[in-house]
Structure formats: structure tokens, C-alpha cells
Image (cartoon, rainbow, N blue to C red; front, side):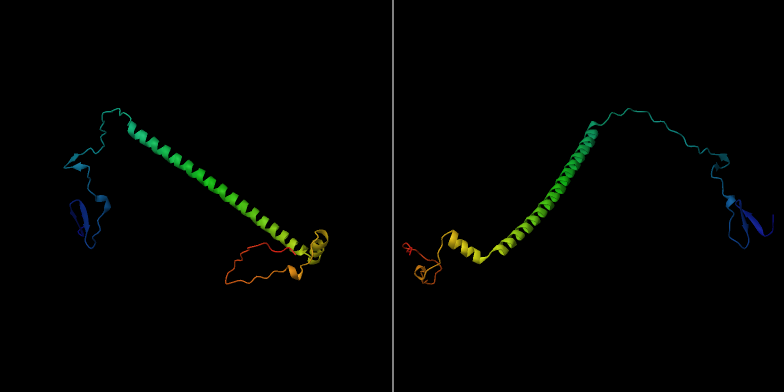
Length: 156
């Protein structure tokens, strides 16, 4: 051997460095000179035929059915909500259209009012006469907005 190295416990130590060689690991399969067999042993257990647990199977089936029913109810409610939302939108659009039509009709009626034609029709077709001074009855009120009639109003 070299005088700069010395041998201790199957490891080579080189003066000036503390690095060990990796290939000098001890063989853990050898135990005091004899070889230890480290192969895994298969331990066979006796086979037992387990009976199915009907309670667990029943709970699983019940849980599955509950989840499915809940899902179906949720989907049904979701579809109803969507249908109602669409019908509300449709009805709102109909209301807007009807409001537009009413506004247009009211505007036509206001534009079509001619007071001269109304006066002619009232006096000539319906036979109405203008009000005379004697037909006007004036009432005085006493701090009330109600008027009580105790007799007939004269027709002249």
C-alpha cells in the first residue's frame, strides 16, 4: 500500500481529504460471514368467503336514490324557473307594446278633439241648448266640502 494512505475498517482513508469512496459500503446482506436471504416470503392467509353486508349495500342504494331524486327535483325547479323567467319577459314586452298602443290612441283622441265640432254636435244633433243665467244655482258653503240637497233643483 501507499505510505500516504492507511486502511481502517475496509475503508480507505487518504491523508488530506475526508472523502470516502462510495463503492466500499458494507454488504448488509452478509451477517457475520453468513449470507442472509432477504427474499420476501409470501404468507398465504386462509381464504374466507365474506357474506355481503346488506345493510351497507342498502345504505349505498338509498344514498344513490336520494341523490338522484334531489338532482331531478333541482333540474325540474331550474327548468320551471327558466320557463317563468321567459314568460315574464314575454308578458313584460306585451305590456310595453300595449302601453305604446294606449299612448298612441290617447294622442289621437287628444288631437281629434275639436271644440267647435263638439258644440255643433251637442246643439244640433243632441238638441242641447246653452246655459241660461236663471239655470245657474250658486251655493254657499260653510267650511265643508259637502253639499246636502233637501229638495229638487228647479228645471227652468
